[in-house]
Image (cartoon, rainbow, N blue to C red; front, side, top):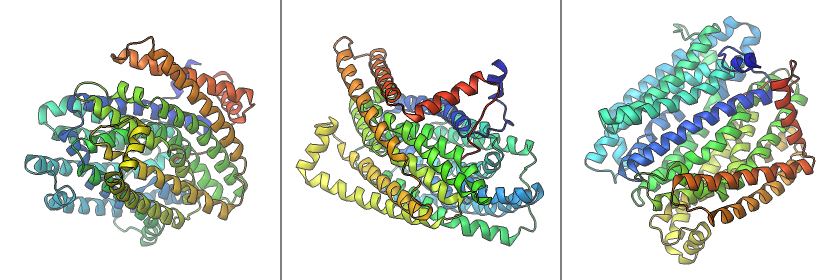
Amino acid sequence: MGKRILSLFNLNREWNGLHEAALLIGVFTFSSQILALFRDRLLAHLFGAGKILDIYYASFDVPDLVFAGVASFMSALVLIPILTKYATESDARAQKFLKDVFTVFFSVLIVVSIGLFIAVPVIVPRFFPNFVGEDGLSLVRMTRILLLSPILLGLSNLLGSVTQMLHKFFAVALAPLLYNFGIIVGALFFYPAFGPEGLAWGVVMGAFFHFFVHFYTSSRNGFVLKISFFPSLKDIWEIIYVSLPRTIGLSANQITLTVMVIFAAWMESGSVTVLNFATNLQSVPLAIIGVSYATAAFPSLSKHFVVDDMAKFREQILLTAQHIIFWSLPVLVLFIVLRAQIVRTILGSGSFDWTATRLTAACLAIFMVSIVAQSVSLLFIRGFYATGNNKIPLLVNVFSSLVIIIGGYELIVWYSHLPTFQYFIESLLRVEGITGSKVLMLPLAYSAGMIINATLLIYFFRQRFGKFLLPIKDTLMQGSFSALLAGLVTYEFLEVIGLYLKLDTLKNVFLQGFIAGIAGILTWWLILELMGNTEIKGIRTALHHKFWKTSVIMPDKERM
């Protein structure tokens, strides 16, 4: 048993089963998200929802656009299918391909970053004209520092495709943990020494850690970064041909997020911070469930398609989709019911006041409405990429991005001019009379766009591969029923516990949410057991085999 536990921390171990790979990624993602939540609590405690954090979050926009527009060409989603194909020929062929990609796209990334470094003082004021004087200068300085992060993360993506292809999932799981650790170091130590720019240097440190884990693991397995003096134009064209639609789609997504931040920056001070904190909180279940399962499935999907085993390809998609939906539904309900306790526990301290807490909780609830759709979209996008079909994800992403941007603008206008609509939203989310509630329109538009995104992806996937997804209906029906009952039990426990605890301390707020949440989870589990749910049985069996049996039978191999 002890050896099994120690083996979890072996960077060179292969993880070939869907459940064990997803569990590993999920556990470390959860740890990373815990660090991320500690990071957010630290930032909220130190600065509250105000100018400093608004500037900090705004400074990510230009670097994130660089990452989406250039570094995404070195994405694992694009490279894994091609690397897998070349690795079946020989390691030398795969190594040559890696060198060519590194040489060309890293050079482009450096040139673009240098150009933007020079142009930032012109670009940033056009994006955020409301940041003036010292605030504007600070935004320029932090943006320039953060331009180092897409370079490091782009290289990390490149080498991460190797570690994922080799099923070295511990490295993939560890990298985000170290990324958040670097940001925390920046908040604790660099900020006191260098001021707000210290926060940006912490991000750069985290990006370096993220890169180094993949660099170490890939180099130990014979894949190293080297300059190719005569890169193959055929290989580079293959990457551009395959990656360009995805890059455009990713750029559309990033532009959407940038526009949302710009909209928030025009609202009351602190709106950017509230929006980002809520986004970060909803990303916890998205990363643990959606990213973990989709990441674990992707290498096997690519392999099944390459060898033309479409039966296993469809089986893999179905199995992964069922488990994503299975876990996401109770999380959706519990996060909405416990939103106030979650935000108060994680962020509600120091300079983060009650108004910011309530607005963040309301934004979180709206984001969570689309958490199942967001998680399922990650899987089906990877399903299309595994087959080399990048056109459909591109068109769907661009369309949903337009829905979010246009819808966000229209919702803001309606909210400002339709008192009945405003009253309905404020009453529903219990934020009556709070200044800055207009920010709620941004997650509302985002959730609507993501639900449309998932619906279209599933529709086109069925058109291409048939109606093999019908068993998902049982998972959806049983999962929804049990999750709703769990939500009702959780809500009732909140009310009862609130009668006996004074909710003016962190300890009591946490206890209220924790006890109510446990009651809800036990209710959810019990109902599914009584219904004979197959996912519950499968998870229980997989965990039993993993930790108590010497031999393990797994469905097959997978990853992001």
